[in-house]
Length: 194
Image (cartoon, rainbow, N blue to C red; front, side, top):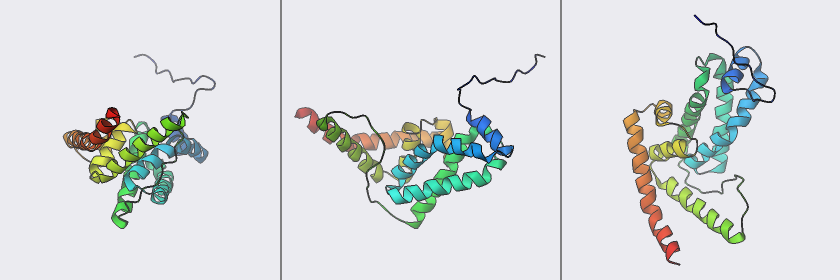
């Protein structure tokens, strides 16, 4: 049997999520700051797309990290950190959705490449349309599509996070894409004519 050779990180190579979780579990809580830095924006965006409200998204993001920090020592599979934290986030989002029925739209505060004023206007208009129509989808369709497209999670990871079957996730994503395409088609057809 060949000896197990530990991975030696070269200078400047960032620590993996697994290494950071292990450090936290070995009583180095400062390693959590790096996990926060890595995941804060993605979790905020996920919350924002589902809640459609900046303040609710901020609250859900904060609650997610507070709960994750308190529970991370009990995380058995460090390699599943991303799915684990998005499961916590999902629970927070749906708790907020149960408490409030907010459909208000607010600008997403994400840096984007600068282009000409016309390009910026077109990009902003497209973002607002997609956001508006995403907001009209059933929450479970919206959630599956956001996790797939924006968080780059696999169908299996989404199924794990949502507690759904793989076929249910495939169906939700198919229906979400079909619905979005149907809603967006008139806007892009009109633009192509002009």
